[in-house]
Structure formats: C-alpha cells, structure tokens
Image (cartoon, rainbow, N blue to C red):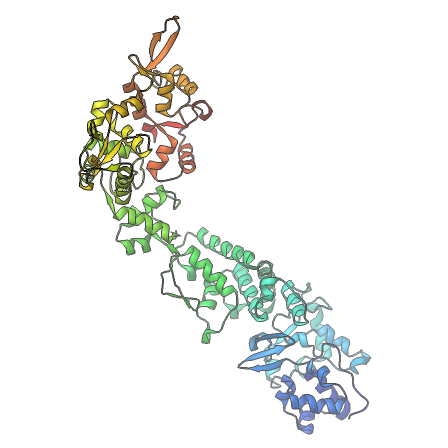
Length: 610
C-alpha cells in the first residue's frame, strides 16, 4: 500500500484520484502511472473490477469508495451511476467540462495536496453551471480527445494564469432547475413524478428539446446551439416538463398556436420542426422516453393522420382526426360541401365558403356527417319515398320532424338541404311502432291524410299525436304503404285537438297549449304588435252570459302564426345543432326573440330572419 494515504475528495472522479495518486507518489503523469502499474486506462474510466481491486490495495481505500467516483458501463452504449441508467450521450467522455474557479481553489487546498480535482458531476451533459461559484463552466471537446478520454484536469484545462484571465469573462448565473434536478436525482433524491417515471436522460433531453423549440423556434439546428443556448433551453423546457403531461401538452399547444399565427399550412413536421424530426427519424429506433407518447397523442388529437401510418415509431391503429381534404378523399364528397356542412353544424369554426386546409375535426363526427350527406334524399323525392303528398312532406321537414342535414340561411338548396335517409326510416319506424298491426282497417279508422280532412285538423299535428302516444286507437297496415299505413280515428283526433273548442273557436287555454306558450304569453301576443304594426295573433271577442268578454282563436290564424314564427328548439333541430349554439348564432347576427322568454315560457323567432 502506498503511504501516506492520499484521501479521495467528495464527488471526485476515479480518473482524477488515480492521476493525483500517481503524481503524489511517483511524480509521473496519469497515463505514465497507469502504464507503470499495468492498469488499462478504460478500466479506470469505467471502474472495472480489476481496476477497483488493484487501486484499493494500493491506496488503502475501500472499493466502494473508489467505485463512487465512476460511471459504470452497462453494455450496448448504456451506462450506470447509482440507481440510474442512461445512454452514453448523457455522460460525455469526449468532452472536458470544468469550473476555472474550482481548479484555482484546488491549488490552495491542503486536502488536494495542491492538485486539481475533476468532479464527477462535471461529466453529465446537463452540468453547465458551477453550483459553488455561480458561473458558466467551460466545456472543451478537443481537450478530452487529446488524452484519449482520460479527463485529468492538469492536462485538459489551461494553466492557472490563463484560467485567472478567463474567469472574469464567464457569465454569472444560478444553476438551472434542470441541472439541479439531474444532480439531485443522481444522488438519490425524488423529483417531479413524470420525469422520475422515465430514464433520466430521456427527461433531460425532452426538456432541452422542448425548450429549444420555444426559445429558438422549431426549425432550430441542434449543432448550431452553444452550451449557453442549451442551458437556457433546459431552463425553459424544464418549466413545462416538471409539470408532467399537463405541462408538456401546454408547451405543444403553444408551439402549435405560434405556427397557426404564421398563416402557413403544414402537418406535424412543419408545426413541430426539429422536435418532430428528433422523434420521427431517430437512428436505430432509439427510444426517446415518455415525451414520445405525449407528442404522438397530441398529433393524433390535432392532425389528420390515417390509420397504418408509422408515427414516431409506432403504426397508427385508428384515425382520430380528419381534415377537409382527407374526408373528401375518403368519401368522394366535394371539399366545399363538407366545409359548409361542418361549419354550419358547429363541428368546425370559420367561413362556410372558405376551406381552411389547416383545420381538423373529430374523425367519427366528420364521417357520420359525411355518411348522412351521402345517404340522403332531396325534399322533392321525399313524397314518393314516404308515400304522402308534397304538402305533408314539406310540413314534416319545415317543422323539423324530418330534419335536414343542415339548416342553411336563405333558400334551401344543394345536398345540405337533403334529409338523411336514416332519419326518414327512423320516422317511419317510430310512426308505425305506435300502432297495432291489422289486416284491414277497423270501424271508422282512416289513414292520416284522410283523417286530417275528416277531423279538419292538420296532418302534421296528427303525426305528432301518434308519435307522442296520445291516441288510444292507432292501427298499422302493411309496411309497403309507408306513411299511409298508419290509421287513426278522426273522431278521437277531433276530441283530442278540439276538446275545448266552441263554435267561436279555441279558448285561450287550448290555443296557448297548441302554440306551446303560457296563457299569459298568449295575452302578450294578442296585445303587442310585430314589425308590420299588427298584433302577433288576432282573436275573436265573445261575451258570456254575464257580459264579460272572452277571447277565442281561429285555428287558421294559429296555423298562420306557426307559419311565421318558430320555437328555438325547433329551429335548432332543423339546423342539426343544439339550442344553445343556435341561440348564440342568432344573437351574433343581431336576431332577437319576438318576446322575452319569461313572458312566453319559450323563445320564438321570426322564420323570415333565420
């Protein structure tokens, strides 16, 4: 054993300690000393068992103490330190990193015997600031190459006189949160859960790549960034990665928003640039950690990526988003037709007449809407398909019982004014399901068209009674008769609809129910005028035996009112959107209800304005 025993400094590398032992006991350089004791240089660098055993015998220090100053090899370009494992790029052996202030202080430190000390934490790529002196450290690739990777600070760093001149020029700063996290984790401390849940170099690199995109733009060149640039990038990126999935998602959204502000068009590679290329085109399919899954999910949730495409190393199982172009190509529908339908129904925002190639939307929602368009029927074909006349078909569509694909402003034309066949078939199914199958009509039973004439009541209202289950007697003949297969009793219809009708007309309670408003709301409509200067609804005055005036209403005037005004819920149903969205859309165009909601207990609008 060499005496006196030279102590190993806390945090010192085995390379540094071996070099100091050689100089102290033999006055030889580290490489000459290794040759003298017949130890391989690489064995000392990686802390091989033979090197630890030999040096322990010579220095009197336990093998465990010596091993603490090494980064061990785990094979296949993998290394370990403590409980952590990482790729070789994370522990840089082709570069010398040092703090000039630390090396100058070593000269006057009795514990070091005046020799420079190489610190273990200087070997990690994220170490760029000296925590003791608060200055940027120097990183010299060429210095390490000149000594074959054996980082002896006496050799790789400049003479003391030069270090003293360099020291005042170095930037002063605090240790970055990323560097602090890496150091503490290497020493066994816990950190943010998302980062701790993956290999240490994965989280560090993800932080730096995200930060670089945010600081220098997504088209930054990694080999063009200085160590100070990477330090700044790590600070920025760690602020997001330390918050896990939520933070990373926020960073991706920010990058995406910045791209959209440029008004350029492009997919995920154009949006995320170097970040995307790093993940998509990695050599040897080397993993990149948890950020890979987060970026992949973000892309699938915001961009049109078809099933089967390999995205960030993994084949896409199911498409999540469509663009106008991809849905048009898949369905054969014109892009402008799809764009108009998606915007009018609220799936997309934008101009119905301008296709935005950068927009995407939920794939299933878009495919369902496209399917409704492709499998639809025009209103002119509807009477033949239903087996009714044109007026009845138009009433069913106008009232929303049979909703159009979308409700367009102005005249209804084109494919979007069609009615989905699924809606028509469902209507017929529900209408027939309300009755009892029979081979021949029962006594007094008529089809809805004939019953409408006999009861002197609109066929549309009879349809609603049937669908609501309000009629006790409903029969159905063969399905081939379609609309005319449903039979009702006109006497029951008359009793249901005109229960409170007199020779003078419907009383106020019955009229209010028919219009779907409160009786006080009907009073408002009687007493107030519309834009034409006439009351919303005229009434028939009559006096009872006590001489008090009673109001009655002509069914034709009530029907006329329904032709001019529409409930919000019915307008929304016809448009294929929610009542809330319909109300917002009308309000944005300055269209207001004809009366306060609390007055009518309903929101009604002029059909001419919708």
